[in-house]
Amino acid sequence: MQKKKDFYAFILAGGSGSRLWPLSRSLMPKQLLSLNGEESLLQQTVKRVLNFFLPQNVLVITNEEHVFEVKSQIKKISKESIQVLAEPVGRNTLPAVLAGFEYFQQKQMIAAVFPSDHQIEDETAWQADLLQAYNLAREGFLVTFGIKPYKPETGYGYIQVGENLEGGFRVKRFVEKPDLERAREFVNRDDFYWNSGIFVLPQQKVLAEVKRQQPELWKFWEQKESLLSLYPKLPDLSLDYGIMEKAQDVAVVPASFSWDDLGSWEALFRLGEKNQDGCVVKGDVLALDCANSLLFSYGSKLAAVGVKDMVVVQTRDATLIVPLSQVQRVKDVVNALKSKDKHLVEAHLTVKRPWGSYTILEEGEFYKIKRIVVNPGAKLSLQMHHHRSEHWVVIKGTAEVVVGEKTLLLTENQSVDIPKAVKHRLANPGKVPVEIIEIQSGPYLEEDDIVRFEDMYGRKKEK
Image 1 (cartoon, rainbow, N blue to C red):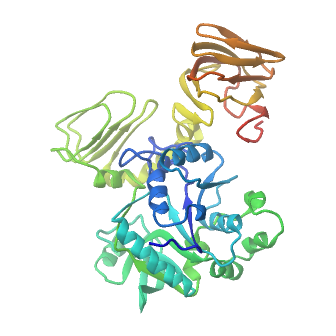
Image 2 (cartoon, rainbow, N blue to C red; image 1 turned 180 degrees about the vertical axis):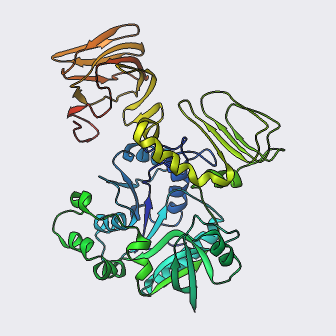
Image 3 (tube, rainbow, N blue to C red; image 1 turned 120 degrees about the vertical axis):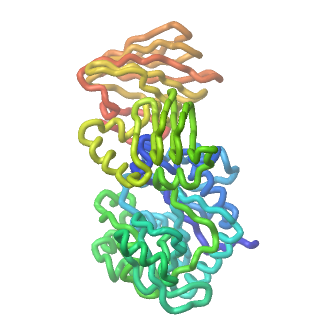
């Protein structure tokens, strides 16, 4: 199969990490997790896209917090150099697509837009449907893919189709997430499909609709400045709401491939491999007389007795217990936690960084203890803290430490003090990972108490 030079792929890899809490967090959303195999959802998406698109035509759009993990994951599964674009803030799917157009600067391009958290089977059928959508886009249609409903689903948007087209249908109307009664009606009709959130879009048609429907956003597009530099000022708009629902010449291609949005614990239960009791079990779990439940544990023993029709997910710092019938309410949990326990929404106890990772071992009101791992050849930024001092103990490898004007080489069991408001840096000059225990003390211990002076990863200063 010859790959088309004017066909581009935008893989959307942002996300807030809310629907699969506590496993997903804002710093580790679901597309970066391995939920249905050894590879993450992002890695699966990238491999699938590379089988159909030219590597130089593929762009992963993520945000600044995730860019290094995204690049790391891509590097593990592809020898091709895949381009990654970092949004400074999240502004939904329509601004992301415009940022992709600006990145490539190809006026006649056709862009396929793929969420990175979908499970798709039968890649041959997927490619055939993409080709149908490409041909419709060449004719001037904005194209989406429709999934035939097999159950009344209130969590998806719907599409009603009309006139028959070559390879698809003209869209009659979009329907927002319905109540259960309407969802039951749609399942029994032949002219309603779920909206998959996958699009194939001719650039000129998109820009014409933005100009017609979203004049505020169009003003930003017309400016000479880079769209990314203006990003915080852009309106938050989805493709559906921003242009598709009121656009002219919108088409849908009924998907002949198997599709699922891995956006809820119910989906993972439904698609997961079940044991003899109908349970999906992962991790260190002891299940006695349990049935029809999802039981996941990460980091400690989970013992469940007599649990039925439930989701129980345990991580080192949080546990979720919810009936399978109410998994949509996980978002309510996340919203409730944001005001009081924000750290539980933002990150796991282990947080990946471009230089390695850190794990929070213990924390209190005026102290925090971390285990820090620095990869060979990597180094943290030259930085300082206004509100905390630190004490480092090397437990593995050889660390190069800058404290003020001094540079020290520390080996196992050696330590150093980092006073408050003093410039410092930790680096690994060796060939094995360096591990240290860091003890922080002070009145404020959050990650935003960092002033960066130098950084090999191009991260902006944080104050």
